[in-house]
Image 1 (cartoon, rainbow, N blue to C red):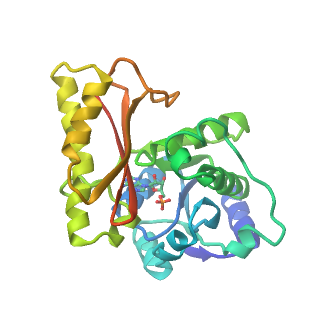
Image 2 (cartoon, rainbow, N blue to C red; image 1 turned 135 degrees about the vertical axis):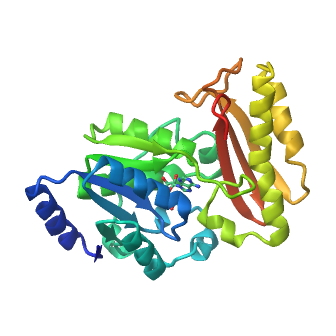
Amino acid sequence: MELITSSERLSEYLAEQRLRRRSIALVPTMGALHPGHLSLIDLAREHADTVVVSVFVNPLQFEHADDFDLYPQTLSIDEQKCRERGVSALYAPTAAQMYPDGFRTSVHVSHFSEILEGASRPGHFDGVATVVAKFFISVDPDVAVFGAKDFQQVAVVRRMIRDLDFRLRLIVAPTVREHDGLAMSSRNSRLTQRGRRAAAQLSLGLRSAQQAFVGGTVDPTTLIDVVRRCCNDPLLTIDYVTLVDPNSLEPVSQAHPDSVLLIAAIVDEVRLIDNAALGSPM
Ligand code: AMP
């Protein structure tokens, strides 16, 4: 595996791969790799010959400087994990390379970027869309793998791929969870022991609503109430729980198996998100 830190070397490396007629998969990450990220890498290896993982903590998608500063950065451990997992190249550019002085361009996917997570984190999805577009342009992959854990991110990226004519296949990997159901996240390492226990209620709530749906409940308000009642630890502050159509992200008036419950909550000042389709047991 090669660790690549400059865009010039990335171009050379990719040209060599294409000359050898190897298909290319891209797995964009912000590092601090955990088994969720590794499952994306496994999926990428199934779909392409060469797997490029990017590790870049993207300043554009952080609203607060302290959240950015606190984000775990563990490049040498990430490098080791990628090597062991059969990654072909790890691309870790600097912020100065990605955003040279005077950088002024932004990709904005309207509506999808403004609702839900976008309402609580203004500018977040512009940062995501901009950096993902830059990686798509510089890597030009045949496939890109994203995690279903960031459901709205997938919706934003999917629409951007369509609107900007990126020629690649988007593959969405299922969420990898801890033994108690908590969705794995690099941010979980910032939780206190108490907060960590409270955080498990998010997935518990989603699972209970799935069970209520299987039991015949189709009223969105009732299903949302089921989630809220499970998330009763005083350490948890719910930002939103909603039941949406997976394509439009608009609230549904009646639940269907493909309707998706989205939840966002703050625990120990850490923002956690999770989601589940009603008809897909977790
Ligand atoms: P991040 O490093 O948090 O930006 O995540 C990089 C990619 O990994 C994104 O596509 C995420 O959706 C995905 N990801 C993060 N956590 C998980 C998880 N627990 N299971 C599956 N994919 C994940």
